[in-house]
Amino acid sequence: MHSSDQRAVALSGSDIPGAHELLVHSCEDCACPPSGGSAVRTAAEPPGGPLVRAREIVECPVDDEHTALFNPDGNGGVLIVNRRGRALLDLFATPLEIDRIAAAGFGDESAAAAVRHLFGHDLLHPAGAPPDPRFAESRQLTAWLHVTNKCNLKCPYCYVSKSDDAMSRDTGRDSVDALVRSAVRNGFSALRLKYAGGEASLNADVLLDLHQYAQEQCDAAGLTLSAVLLSNGVAIGRRLAAALTEHGIGVMISLDGIGEAHDAQRPTVGGRGSSHLVLRTVGRLLEAGVRPHISITITSRNVDAVGPVVRFALERDLTFSFNFFRDNDCSAAVADLQYEEKAMLEGLEAAFAEIEENLPRWSVLGCVLDRGQLLAPRRRACGVGDDYVVIDQRGGIAKCHMEIGDTLGDVRTVDPVLAVRDDSRGIRNLLVEDKQGCRDCTWRHWCSGGCAAATFRATGRFDVRSPNCAIYRTIYPQAVRLEGLRLLRYAVT
Image (cartoon, rainbow, N blue to C red; front, top):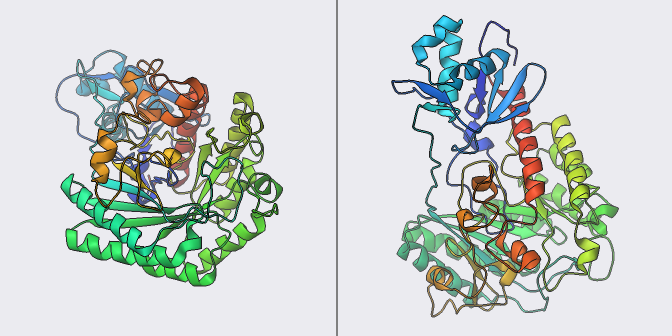
């Protein structure tokens, strides 16, 4: 984007062709549902009366000429302005009528357009009426289907106690029946299935039969169905890749590094490296027309090697997400896996440098912030206890896959959604306003206090902020800056 000092420029995601398709909701391997709102906000016509600058705007310089702006008290969306656009915003430090900006030298058409953008992104608001975050009600039920407890890897951070137990066709169909009934009864319009394990591809025949049955039942019930296979990428052959394409099943592949960095924390059961197998699978999926999402789990073992796997994904135009290690009863010694805050920030900065060097057209606001995102405000970090259900290989219902052994009933006798909503024993997914250290935080509606399971593991409490709070607060402005760079690269002026 080129601009001069004589023209106020303000650009947002809506100025990039295909804007909505470029938002990545990529928390596939957890309970985080797709955001109900949208970071693609447009220019809007302000009402009559004076406008004033929002109280708490995050400003991230992008270069000598441009600044990325974000209002954490608003409803999402980054806006990038040039110097003149930034000066225009400052005119509204005190309430000002729009028709008065001409007297300050902002009477041209570009200034009027910039004001509309500033208002549409909650950076300006009517005096005395600051914006209220709008928390969209979820219309999608997300279900984690644990189709097998068997795995061909031995990852030290895994939370599953492995066995050869697998979901049968009958149990899978009973699970689908229960989910469809529950979705309709509780007012959902869509069902999303996450085929997981263990390694779900090891029970591929049941998985594919289950998906076809789910499609039939959702069609009959008037529900929209979507699905994703969560895989370690070791055992997906060409036949399965073609079947996934045919059925429209998305794929998430875990890749924690390139070569030794991946092998250090994702060895096979026999102790060999698996990186070469995963890279081969990615190639097969691309040949079959499937663009897998790359999930990167960060521990102390690979915290300094995240950059190369980010580069690998970007070179192939693959979306990716960062997941911070979460301690659990099945994981190896915490001292061996738990990252230090300084090391994590250095590792993320190296990854962000790769993103800046290879800027994708799609937005990273929803994928580089662990369980947080900057796409739409939320009061809870995930859907646990509300619109997320876990079903184990026997048909048992659980609230969170991190607590898959703590079942609340069986799909053959219990409404899954009511079971997780009525339970008061396990994980408590509190509102962010109910967490100490979060209530007055700038970013409270974006990280929503972090993962409840991780917080409880670290502190023994659910009503306090995440132990990763300082990391989140440091990297959020960097994500805003990256979004500003994307707008400069791809926005059409």
